Amino acid sequence: MYFACHGKNQNLIPADRRSAINITELLEALSVPNIGAIEFMHFSCCEMVSSDNRKQSLAEYLTASNAKWASGYSKSADWLQSMLLDLASIAGLAVPYHNEGKKKNVKVSFRGRNFLKNYNQLVRELGFSRAYKNRRGEIELFPPRQRNT
Image 1 (cartoon, helix red, strand yellow):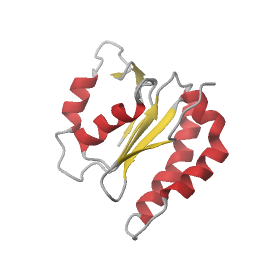
Image 2 (cartoon, helix red, strand yellow):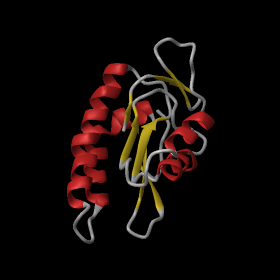
Image 3 (cartoon, helix red, strand yellow):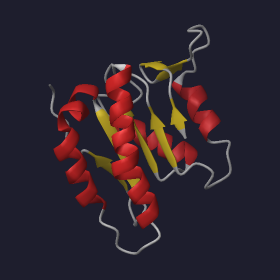
């Protein structure tokens, strides 16, 4: 699932700018689909991840939707920069994770290190964060720490 609209303080703001969807409404809507209907979720919107508690805000999306992966930005994101990082994360992280997810003992950290090496500047500028459920069902945060720019 890919959300592409404006966002502010974890609220989706559609193009009409009058019908904002607050975080509570969003979490309720995400809990409606059947289990397994949403595997990956990315918010290509400003401020959809709390900068104060990235893991908790992403965990709320994962818990509500029962997805394996949720990601988004904690800062204001220029549309072109965020689109480039969206494409890079889909190609470099999501697709391989999905394809390799059927295998045992997949090492997500290797792809994550390469992604950070190649896109570290954009990750920091936009506050990109991702959370996923590991094999034990625990939620892990990526990148584990975020430095201010």
